Image 1 (cartoon, rainbow, N blue to C red):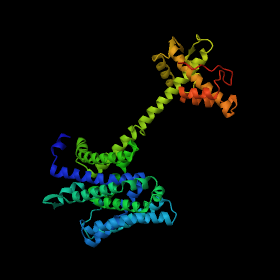
Image 2 (cartoon, one colour):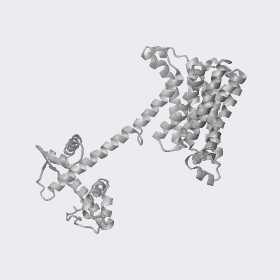
Image 3 (cartoon, rainbow, N blue to C red):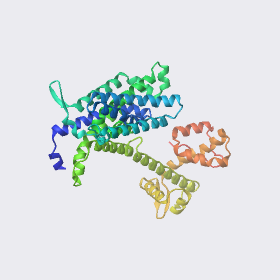
Image 4 (tube, one colour):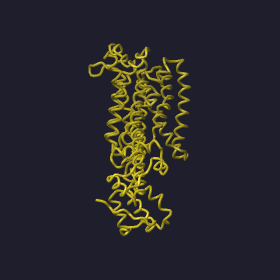
Length: 441
């Protein structure tokens, strides 16, 4: 790692990172609206389908840098969106199927043309597919008296145009992304917004070819926005987070391309590929640890809820056992047999109840403490009030109320117990003739 950093050259590595950041941010900015519209595949479709435009431009101009190539590919990209929408609308074909038909057909034509173009021009199919970001500084131009890589200038303009488009039509993009029908009633032309977005997606994809290639640009369109969506439900924050993820992915991707292979005794790898890997890792972290949608927090919440239900079932069981004789105790085997839960989980929860002084342990026997009895009484009060309510208001037979009341008791707070008490006319006995515990202060 030290060797890799020691070989850092700002004249080379600095421009590579700048190009990567501009490319990633330009794609991520539009990617937010593709993800919201559930049209992520369309970015993929356009990125593949513009190959015929590139190949035709190569055959016509015999150059990889001609503006004709850019225009040709952009036109084919826009046509991809038009063809997809037309097939979907006029042919009554599912939008996903329409995308598949259009982009696979155009991609296949593009591959055939590229193979033909290889014999006539200096064209490397790998460059089209995987990019050549490492070659960024080798094609400089002069702007305002200063030399900079051409791809940086192009990507800078593309990012600026995308940003201006989003700022100018933010409200329209937001409404058409969430509710196209509402946009139409408000006088917003949803179709023109769609085609405007698709045009910029096509232009961004073409401009990004030299940086990240045809395949990897798809990751920049989708992954940063999908990562941001895992972390927030607010569009401004989603856009900001996606740009941050895209920029960090570009920086860490290039550093990783130098450091990670060297750590295992290999040479450096492609920076564009590592940039896509970096944003993929960010998405993986969001998928695992997002506070609202992450797998780990969901697992913790589920385990906490399971533990709460087991604890309340144990307290309720002990309360019923002690209801008419507070000196009654129960063995763990008796408790475990009456509760449908994992024995290890039951034992852990029971030990926790002992630790928090809700349950008193006497050798192998267990009974409620005063605090535990209060908590269990509130639980049993909720259970029996629900049974009374279901019989009185729901016309449920008394012998059918227990399963429903057992589920509802775990989610009934003091305020809801008061409402149930009022609805049941302050009943003192449940439908089974058992006393309803009074509300404790």
